[in-house]
Length: 421
Ligand SMILES: NC(=O)c1ccc[n+]([C@@H]2O[C@H](COP(=O)([O-])OP(=O)(O)OC[C@H]3O[C@@H](n4cnc5c(N)ncnc54)[C@H](O)[C@@H]3O)[C@@H](O)[C@H]2O)c1
Picture 1: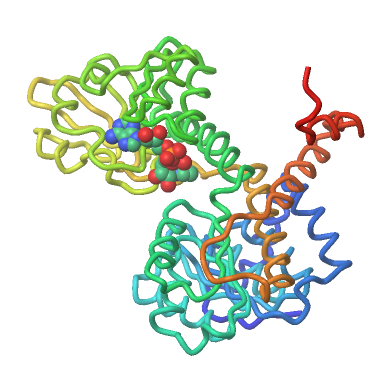
Picture 2: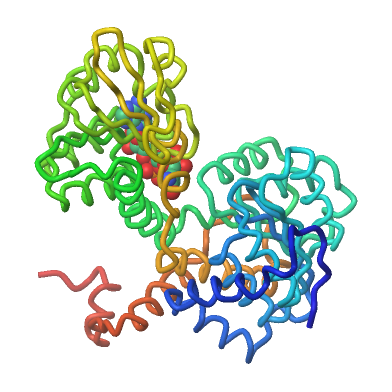
């Protein structure tokens, strides 16, 4: 089968794209199992699906799974900078219609989303809520035909909740981001490891024995702190939430306000989802050679404008994805990836083995939506617990790990309030 080319850079890259997708799939056993199931049960047979996602090898593996389930798919890129032209080409050759070219401008980006919507979707997969937003603002005639969709990002779910609160969201959207298998594993293990990767690639600094300051001890911050400690760093955590701060303290991290942490840190990583976490007053007291990186979604956590203003000179690209700012007193501060999300900009983002779970969850949730949409009300829904648990079970099975199972008497005991001491 051949999809229509839509708008991609170069179909001759398809072979390279297939190789990349197959490499990713080696680390995605859960998605492979779901695909086998889909090929037998065809839960998406004949259904039209519009997706707006990062067009990468891992997404390619998800698209192949949905295709095996019988869906007809139009795919647009959710970020033109992350588009892998070879993955786009391979997916066209696999049977999708793809609208994705690396580096298109904003107008091209929305033209691609609109073109994908021309499929008149019954199901949608979004990543950041731009496709769902375009449906509700520009393509309202298509809205009644949509059964529902999935949204896997923190920022997309926030937008969906605003739409729902306004009474504007017209169909069910599942907040895949909030499920245990996504949030715990993607944010913690994916961001944790790939942020270390970004620090090493951009600076090749030795982390053992150094002080790493982690701002924000949420799902991502826990992972970053854990991995930094694993490499031998002394970790300092900064927080605003008392429970998170207490958790960090009991984990054995030093918890300090940033004003006190700033002069101590050799490396700083912000993962708060908030702005101005590192700012002028902190740059003013940092050590010579301090490395600054952000792993939060938006590039607002490090006040880069203030850093530029404070600096007397800037040496761009002192290394790949690393700029050096020289301050008046001779200290140098090193900024990774211009303060943009470092694990994506200076490394490769989450490894495929982590994406495996989030994508398996999206495939199973899409099939669930296709079957149960008539019983669902418009709004933001959770991933059914059954699917969350199923993905964890399949991942364990793929790793050859077995667990205990409750006996009948144990199940009875955990259900009953009569059985006490
Ligand atoms: N880099 C990636 O690949 C990746 C992956 C997932 C999420 N994210 C992004 O990372 C950010 C954090 O995600 P999360 O899931 O850990 O969120 P979270 O809400 O679980 O954690 C954020 C933590 O930061 C704390 N915080 C807020 N403002 C602070 C401040 N000024 N100083 C210190 N701490 C502060 C909060 O109290 C909270 O504990 C978000 O922007 C999210 O979109 C990035």
